[in-house]
Image (cartoon, rainbow, N blue to C red; front, side, top):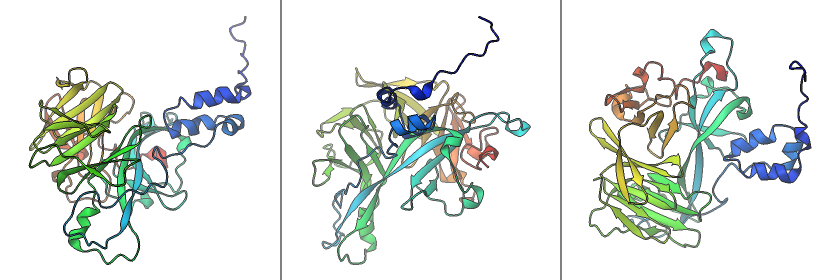
Length: 378
């Protein structure tokens, strides 16, 4: 056969519906399914539009989660679960523009709005919602025009008052403020854990009429962080003490090492913790599931860790240009420099190789991961 002969394209649109459905069921995210459906009309008709949310719809969670002596006994209401997604966005192809030959990734957190087609734009590492960013962003953001990767799901509980509620007093507000929320993976029974007032943990299952407050048997437990991994929630208290809680509320203690952050490493087999000493010193540990012990991690290789107020995650720097490998991204007020009107304003970058920290704004070549929006987005 002549090497220059143009080979005919396979008739992809003729694939059977059952085969297309089987392929779609193996895709990892709603964004992947959107790309799949966008190939041609036949594929779009064969595969239903994905549900962007990974949690059951219209759930009403009990209120309150924990006891509050100041709470008005007539107070009525419930919580709804709000889901946000951290995306990494990249251009589909390199530009001939010399300024865009090596385009970098853009990391954003997007929360669905009550208005159809509208979204809320948030800082990837905190719950803060920015109000005046629309002038810097395109009016329409079609994710099919870019390479889009779902990096992490983030959850919050929103209080909805019901009935003839009296005006809420200041001391009652702590019953509505939830520091962090995590849910079980989509392949496991649906379970929600919260970190709320006074560093207390609450857990809720579909069959529960009220929240279960976690009691680890210690007098002064004050938890700072937690995450879900392989059927269990792992929680870390302010002294670095670690426990795991399964859906049956069985508690397992881990006595070494001590750390303050916990997160799923993005792998079925890896779960990690980070120790943070002040002012800025981090160490990373990885859980050995079989031995229930934590091993020290000297280097992250090409990976980077992100520690946020309401979510922790890690990514491959090789896959996300503009992200610095073997580093930890974290937030601290000392990095804000009085300028808090854009995402990443208080983000720091910690290098695990030389154990030094700097404001993200001072990291040459890596400072624009969160802000400003890349030029190729316009």
